[in-house]
Structures are given as structure tokens and as C-alpha cells.
Length: 137
Image (cartoon, rainbow, N blue to C red; front, top):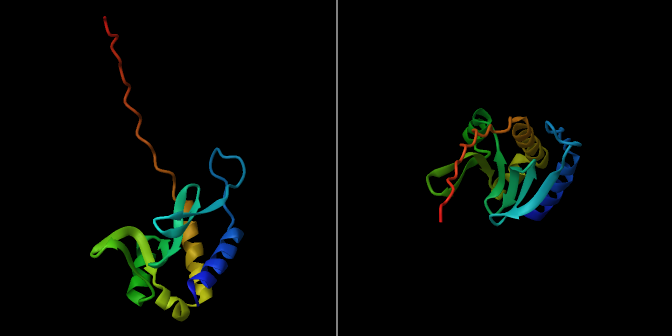
């Protein structure tokens, strides 16, 4: 399976994912696809949940699921520099796509989507009140 084949199947499957309505938003929202960092990234509500590029298929997953995939040898921790993993991200290298299977890859994308959409939005701390003094000229 080539990257182009997977990308076509991935994009088709992503269009089928139901985007739940965000609190206070009108309508269910949508999934955006755009290039980011040399990869094709897929975003929901402005948050990346999957990307496809030279590193393979990147997915954002909870720690337990991420660790299970790494232990099984299906995926590896995604890192931008050797030895520095990138948080909750895991990479399924293109060399593992055939062994993993298309259905399993699409299920992982769906898991990543569910994980990102179920996460509550980050609370922003209240902004400090700024006081300006009048300048006397």
C-alpha cells in the first residue's frame, strides 16, 4: 500500500466521521485538511488528530493505547529529534501499513478522532487587568 493509496482511503473515511457539535457552536462543525510541517494534517475544531507524511501515519492517542501499540510493535513514539518523543503522538511507519491492514489503520484514525473530540477544551486563566496611567505632557 502506498502513501497515496492510504491518504485517499483516509480522506474518504474522515469525511464519514461524525463531528459532534461544540458547546456554543452552531452546527456540527467539520474536519479540515491542511499541510502542516511537511505533512497532510487532519484537524477537528482546530486540533490535529492525525497526519500523514514521511514519518508515516501520526495519531494522537491516550497514553495506555499509545503504549499498547508501541509494545505490540505496530507503532513507535513520534519524535522530532532522536530520544525526544512528542507527547501523546505515535507514528505508524509506512513499512508497517501492509502488516497492520487498512481496516486497522482506519480504526486507529477513528480512535484518535474520538480521543481529540472527547477532550474538554483547555480552560484559559483569567487575564490580568491592565492599568494604564495617563501621561502628563
